[in-house]
Length: 365
Ligand code: IPM
Ligand code: MG
Image 1 (spheres, rainbow, N blue to C red):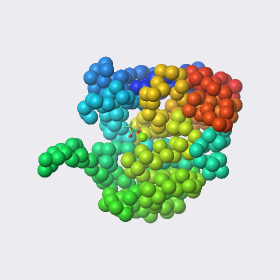
Image 2: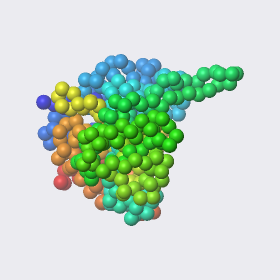
Image 3: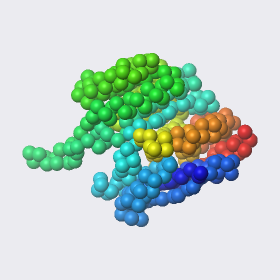
Image 4: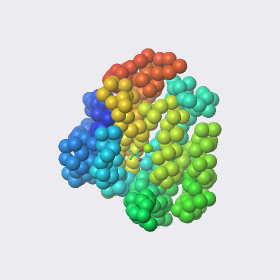
């Protein structure tokens, strides 16, 4: 039976990097993994066509697909739009309505790129951590929110809100992942200043004590966690944290690996009848409007996001390993998109040349 995949290239560099992923998907299709692909609009592209960053029809297609692969959303052209129709709302609606509460953001430092990180080689070489970011609650969605007028001046309000159930379910995902890795979870919040952080810490600890006593659990304030991520990131295995802290910490973790252009992500919901979670895969980088359309974008984050889809949605772990190995080989050979060309040298490649090289490496394996 063919795997159904909804592709939403979106804005900025989204369509460029997605074109390279399609070459990779076509390769696996030829190799016998059958895909049924649909493509649709999201973000600014959907706003331009339909006046909304995500139509109900696209939402329904996303709900029905085995997996969704998204490029990026947003751009300066849309800055002045009302909040309710900004490109980002399209992505947030997908996450919320598909109930994709667990966002997996692995930060792995490929050996070939260890000199490229802004941190010293010994700090990042061999790094392999997983950030699990809660994705459907917290300050991104809490009510009340808005800009109101109070006592003659405006006040901007957002609300950090977490239920026990929301913390419980994302903590479980982190512990389950840790068991298949190095068996360590570090939970990050600001329990020193936020009640939601106090509850977060209590619930994560309770989930641990009840069901995951075999996993090593530590707690850290998120600010200290950010500092430790830069000081000695290899102390971590799995980090579990809320929506906003996860947004910040995962961008920081991305730079450990050399470039934001390298980081994939998977956003997963609860398991469904077929045993698979609802799922959306996307690179952590954004739409990068400053380099869009110039062949400078690094397609690897999006290609590795497809590798995560192979692993988590399509039961094709071996295919995922093979794709990740192909990417590693291309980097080891010295091929570099603009974001990775630096003092350490390398051979310059356009977005398309990088995609072609990954396909060639798949052929060679
Ligand atoms: C991310 C992005 C998004 C977020 C934006 C585009 C809404 O920064 O996925 O990390 O803030 O979650
Ligand atoms: Mg972000």
